[in-house]
Amino acid sequence: MYRNGRLVTQCVLYPLRIANGAGGMIAAGGVATAPTPSEERRRGYVERLLRAVCDELRSQNVPLSMLAAFRVSFYRCYGWRDDAGQGRSYVIFSAEHGKRGRVVRCREMVALDPQARAQIFAFFPAFADQCAEVVCNALADAPVQMLMPDSQEYTMELGSILQTVDVAQALEAYVFPRDVAGRVTLRIVDDWLEHNSAVPQLEIEGDMAWATRLKDRRCRCAL
Image (tube, rainbow, N blue to C red; front, side, top):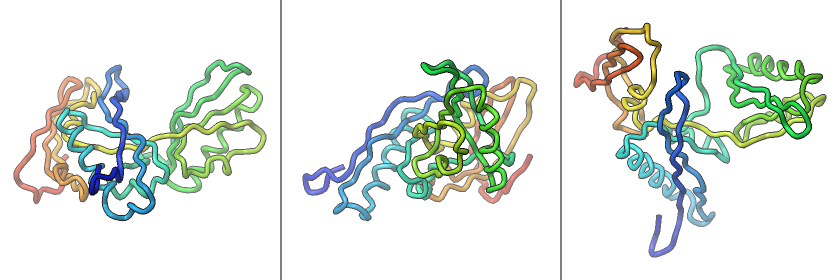
């Protein structure tokens, strides 16, 4: 993005794919390298750039976007999120063979409150005599290193946060269990991406779904 012939902000958009848990993949746009000179900040350039990115992804039928945030709170107001799930906490990890022995690689951790988060970090010491290293995928401003026990060696890898560029496309890309069938009506409110604010009716059958936008926005939710 240029202002008076001077570059004020930019980004790089990478084509990504996210596993849907059923053997398929969902297209996503990876946003990276979006610096703005200090003298050009607080003028709305990043917001305009991110809106253009979402418009570009939506025109290509890419329903999701991910970025590695230097500070999660900065991008949260634009719709990118790092929280998910309805349980109190969960961890996705794998055990791999590294150069110095077995490596436990934590790919995702989510906790809804401090107590649930403490349980996650109490989980990793169980591997103290089984692995040489624990590698965690976390956000740049997450205090993970401070919360981990000192008895193990930990390595941090920068994680990403997620934005739903197009709710309807994302719902249709999701692979549902084959034994699930029915109709769901949702009311979506998105203060940043207005095209997402709608009442889609979702028809689910045979692990697939079709979204139809309803005209009546007064609907709350019908299950």
